Image (cartoon, rainbow, N blue to C red; front, side, top):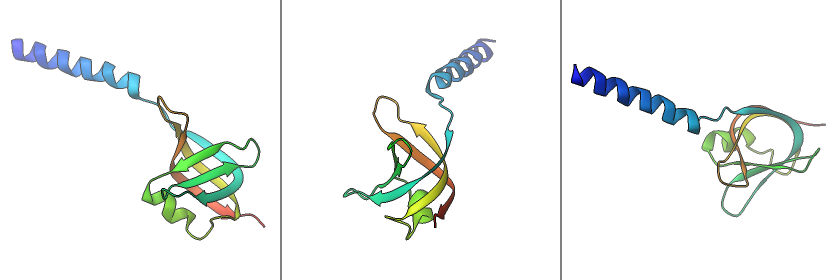
Length: 99
């Protein structure tokens, strides 16, 4: 009986601990340009509000490919980084050059 109670309390604690850290990704649908900084991160600047979105993972870098410094139409998942001023681009749904 004590083991079941202990396991239930641990599971309940883990559940509530994750609620504080869970942050849902939002969708960005914008037009702008990608650049690469000196640290190797890909940075997207939105033309409308000049906000910057940072892409550190390899999936984002691969999808951008040779579209650096070109105007593109982007649809991506973004997350605001806790305790920092940057917004991360976690996944690119689609990226197309604008003519």
